[in-house]
Image (cartoon, rainbow, N blue to C red; front, top):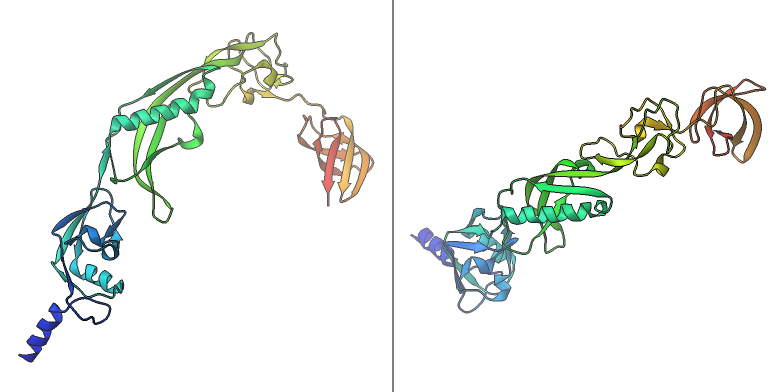
Amino acid sequence: MRARLALALCLAAPLSAAPQAGRAEAYALKVSATAHGPWLRMGEILEPTPPKKIADLKIRRLEGPGKTVEVGRDLVAMKLKDARLGAAVSLSGSVCLVTASARLVKGPDIKDFAEKYLRERLSPLSGAAEVEVALKEPPPDLLVPDRSVRLELVPPAGGRFRGNVLLRVVAHETSEEGADLEVGQALISALVKVKQDQLTATRPIRRGDLVTAENAALGPVDTTYLPEAGYASLNEAAGLKARTYIGAGKLISPSMLERPPVVKRGDVVKLMVRAGLVVVSVSAKALRDAAVGDSIPVEIVDSRKQLQARVMEDGTLVSETR
């Protein structure tokens, strides 16, 4: 009988950090509540409304928007005890069903946001190209927390904004600690068509021919699905020669051209050999053709020793040794 009486007194005792005189503050867990987070706080699940020092106590982080979790009396009691409020508190109720607040960002609004981003991203091309942007069906509505969030668009892989483009619209919020949190995302597809003036061959260009105004000119080209960018002016290809045959009307791309050699195989050239602070000038024979900036094997005329050397603008070759 004494054991049962002791147990009853224990369950009825108020929660407090230390024994206090006077009557305990009595609160009850709500049966259900909606929390606006990102943290669930005491004031959202207790009734009557507690004072601020209790109401602001954090209990746990909320789940995703619209998700519901059970918050039991034991967890709430532990948080109240850990807070060391200095006042006795009694708590009734067993569990509260807590739903994280949520709102919908409409699919058409996401589509409009993505289209605006795309047009701003492609605006530098508008003066030199015809750009057509067509977004496909709006994505499903996006469920986000019912608090301040911002939308950002993640560029497509490789940063290529042409052809079939898959865009990721991400909802972010800033946590109380200042961290950037992703709280939702939506995917949307777009087709971006681009037509712009590019350098094309006006007549057949044979391998080894220089690209000039006699065999190339600018013309409108659909560059939507081109694997590499071409030349936007003849000056960009000035001094370059064809490394392969280019048919009339074909787009001229960088992979089709190369710099003409300034050194040819068998040429005897000036070689500057550097070893620390010491520089020695010798004569050497080029063992293959090379353009400016190329690194080629050379043979020193006097010793017939072979080195690797880089071709400079003036045709001199430079070799670094240790």
